[in-house]
Image (cartoon, rainbow, N blue to C red):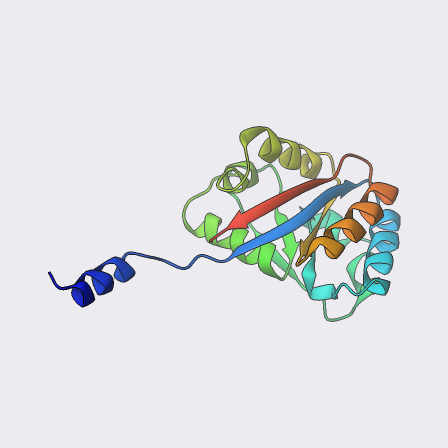
Length: 168
């Protein structure tokens, strides 16, 4: 096989999977979410880089999403073995979770386990099961990460994690 054919053969087996990094924290109420999103937006984060995940009834209720932006929409994620309908605001997290659902993930925890260690996937599933709002902040550089940590730690009800979602 010539070097040209060899390179072509190798390239055909390589799949380009995008990697996205997120800071993640859970909130007991919309007040903390609103405070954090306002802080992040004033620091330069765009609303489309912030995803809220939780039970549909929690995300759709009260002054939540529409108070932030009328254009925010929920994407239902009907995992068959979760006790209630889970939703996520449209964006990269919702897209990836929807893909795991299409591939047969029966729960949010199983879907998250594709990227996260089991303990972290369980922690996020438990946060949703506890009626919390899980905010995912997409990070693009070290400044984003520092700003997200400061904002999330100040207002969230728990620890802050940083997770890489590789591929779909």
